[in-house]
Image 1 (cartoon, rainbow, N blue to C red):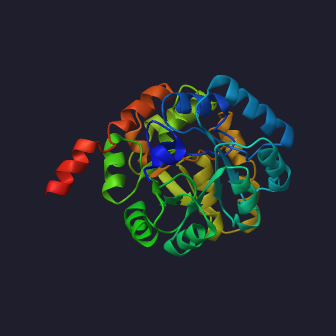
Image 2 (image 1 turned 90 degrees about the vertical axis):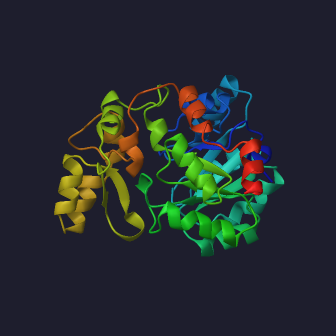
Length: 305
């Protein structure tokens, strides 16, 4: 099944749920543009989630998604909201959605886990996932260990459900490449960091726009590996070997970035930031990315050759 048919959207383009950043204005703008906007719940309460859902529905009649990062301490508070007031799609990451998978399916919510490797992709498919997001380490924020180039085709070969490619995709060329690897769609985060509707300080967007091809670094180890733009904070994090100091420096650093604290903020962004060069409305970003989606004519030519 095509991803557009599965999700009832015009373009197979998913706006990645950026923690504390993907708020209703951005979500609605992406969905109205024909993609799928996805709401963050990293800093949500049950009440704020209810309010965000109401705001999104007032701004668009198109499908949208909600992200649940399963390491969040608020999951037990948010699930009842999503079961009582079902949303079209729930994306899960950083944990096992098995305990509540069936409940979400019963309320006709499509569940799409974000996965870091083939083994977990197979488990999610067996569990009943409608699709999976195969996210490479080029992405911003918390990352795995496999690149998008190597991960996507192996996942696509291993499961019979649509695979959404993520990590290092911010241009129409990147979208074309994802489909060539076997993906049925793309999830994009960094390009939407600089959308007009994204509620972060101008300094955050400016750092993304000014980034070069080697403008990001990875700090932390294991499950705490995070990709961010190079800043004074990342210099300090890379220089310390003391876990206590590392924790003190990094705690609350994303929120500091959101409000524009260049000295002390963690400005999470993907490696593709070097290709993101200007602030634009979300609609223009979606429209440009959609130019990389193969057409029926492309498929016919491919079959002939």
